[in-house]
Length: 78
Image (cartoon, helix red, strand yellow):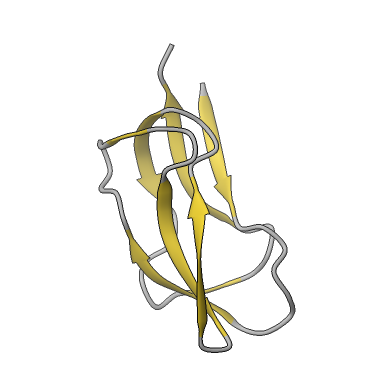
């Protein structure tokens, strides 16, 4: 099953993708940090919501993103 990685609600300021911590095809575990987001000079990590392989990065470093936006896709391990 494919699971979307969604940017949570974090405020109204412009949000920017800083870095991905996993490459497509990498095995990730629920709770692993996947992507770092920068907002007003502070950073926070978006974790994996499921265990599986990172199938796709929908956004790239330096992209401006919105809360609720899909950042990537995990293909869950069964």
